[in-house]
Length: 333
Figure (cartoon, rainbow, N blue to C red):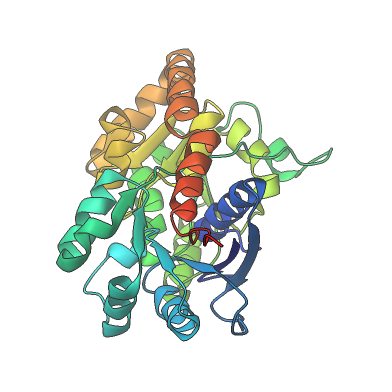
């Protein structure tokens, strides 16, 4: 099939949607389909170009994809990727979801949320857990910054988009009291500025609390050394559509994780690795830092969980089956 895929950002942006899209594109191309990936901002699909459209993010990509699909009378699949499950859907989103032939979520909580938001579309919901591919190793010598840290520094690494729903400010405010007691503590935040006000607040906090540093966006191909150098990978997100790419990538690398207690994080990395309030975050972080060998043993066990539950082959097979359901039957002569 000829498949068009729409995402709400540039395909090369260091964002979760682009990472997911690239992985799905690769899987479907290996299944023999022709794929074209484009952003909502630049897409100009000519009539008759595709047999199927896949939109990542119901709110930001769904309406445009719906317009293309209705124009060409072709099926539409919408993949809910996270923030499209927050708040009340717009009329355009409601129409796109209603017109779509299939609705895919990355986890069970997201599926329940879709059924709550779109009660007339529950029978179209399919859960395909997000898979993860290993972070590529950069060409030597790789990024210099991780090598500049002294060996005694305790690095907490937080890869996240800089916007309110990801709550990057919380990492600094929650860890500031701990940094006073542990001067070797460092918090590095990597991500693109997606909301100007949050970015300005983050800059101000980093200036006030010098243990914290915002690195800006880091290409996926350069992330591995940062993950490897970090003692803990942290997520303070308020909402996710499923297991986040960054936490899955860290889990696959066998790195210790801490994440906010939200429904998607309860599915992965699991309740044991979640924190409620800021005091809980500091307590659990200290436990990981004070017993690094125990933390790494636990992370190694979680790596096997990621390999089995979020395998590329499993995700690829589910998407291939879904796409195949839209292949028109061969007409008998």
